[in-house]
Length: 389
Image 1 (cartoon, rainbow, N blue to C red):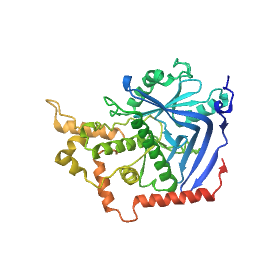
Image 2 (cartoon, one colour):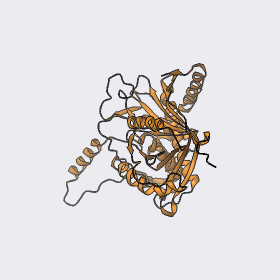
Image 3 (cartoon, rainbow, N blue to C red):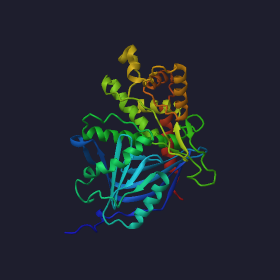
Image 4 (cartoon, rainbow, N blue to C red):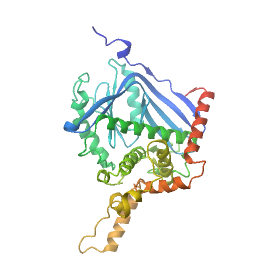
């Protein structure tokens, strides 16, 4: 019996853009498509794990903070959220299949069979504007209806995404040589979703302050009245660094020091694009919330676990001076190299600073402020109607 035309197998698209206003910004739905499947792709060879994470409506939303250069765009299937940025690759690998790549994460999205062509045209317009999009639909990835489409396509997909991620500075060593089950991989997806929701709320309620927590890098955003071109896009490292910090913190708390990944904060931004990231103060804010909201507990100092040799595990290695090389010249070259590349503030010793910050906070803590902001945000949603864009 042919069910390909049944409602469960046909995606419908809603392109009526709606805007919801919040105290410090707006949250717009750019597109909504019914009947999508979100897959997670990961591992290598016998350690390969592929599985459906969520089924439901797929939507793309744009979050814009008022009186700030910061904006962000995110994808949603059910309650799972993940970001798309101008330095993260998105590929079309089939007639109805798309791939989203970030450090340590690879998502596969499949829309239902017999989607109208206008769905893909609308999606491609959005992807071309908000991420690093490439159409590889003509490349042979296999039959999309095949039950092993994603594992069979993984090598070809990563041969495209991994070189790009390495060029911009992605470095994720945790998966190499480690056996992860599906629960571990789904946990990482949930952690990314949590971080995306946290950044969204921080922008909309104003807890991410543009003058205190945000740093803009790259070309200046165009001041031409266009809501997108006049703002800066987040770098993917805004999200992936926080996810990595969550994983490293769990490793530290379990005293599994041998699993700590090397720290390489190199970042080479895509040229001619205005990016934004949180600075050190913003990072401390985010990590403080993560510490209290999830499973992390920094109240026990890292020195108690690691002793005096903790820097051996946590501090990036210093370049050795070659024989015959002047140490002052080497230091100057190293400083010049650091200044040339934008700085990513994520450093695992910063977890100690989070602990110190938490101990010094008053009863009206950052977390309580964020929860108050979240309550105000929910009240705002109840009071205000969605306005057509």
